[in-house]
Length: 248
Image 1 (cartoon, helix red, strand yellow):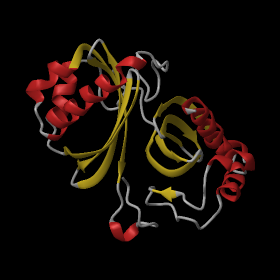
Image 2: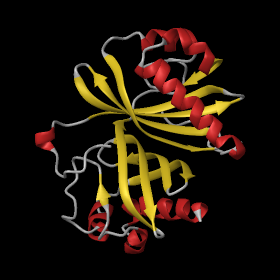
Image 3: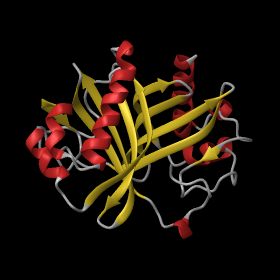
């Protein structure tokens, strides 16, 4: 069932590119809850929206896609008027997608280690370790990111750590320095989704004095974080939201 859900979400996301109305049949629009604060909920049917967007010749590439129970989450590339990288999260109920979250950032990079925001392994392995990997990332987010326990970094992160953030580079030293930046503060984890060796953490915090969503994707190997991708997006002020569902 989850593999089918993955396929359905891939078809849905590619529908932005093709405008195929069949792509949106996976969505129960009567129940659909939209968490992108810039989107008007229910103002335009998805089939109509996708047909309109397809006329702008967009390009959509699903780099990675994962399933966790009732959730499917995807790591994506978008090329509309500009190039963007995103994480898309969908919740299923009774065989259809009924809720959606996302986090989008303009493409930058490659970073100082030569990595793009999306390159690297895509294959899911170690399915039997899904829950232990989830708990590893949960502890890392809580102890190192939220509580700023940088002295605990080596407990969770491998020495040969690979970084895809466009403003950083590989290795523990660079990560240690980045986590010491007082301008970026993690406040709370809202979602923790996992499949095998990949775990996605949807976090809220402050960057430069502005409320932000930090979506962090981790790859786990031998009980440690070995690779990281992310997107960072400012959360608009409440008065500017186009729906009442909240970013998370």
